[in-house]
Length: 147
Image (cartoon, rainbow, N blue to C red):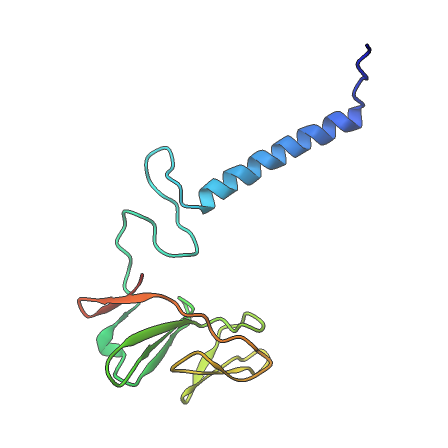
């Protein structure tokens, strides 16, 4: 039985697949927030890293009952019901990914004109067809935090 020899092209292709797979695995571990060699965790798009105290998004005093605040840097919309319950939505338009802005009691997308209800995140005018997704927040010691 004879073993066929590998061509140079096949060998290079196999090496590239191995390198790219290794890089992909490394990036997946880093993005998942898995503990690194020192026991620390990495930051990710879903919230603060473990073992650290998150910075508050806003003081509850700056969000009156019935009020709405758009935090452009955090890309979050905070609302407070007349009863005092705090709710949050993504400030990213579900149509084109632009950050919405507050216009009266409506969240307006500057890119294509979509409109959302400020208190629920529901679409009131397209082209967006999906509501703004909810964001989990918690109120502690008079401060609003992402949970």
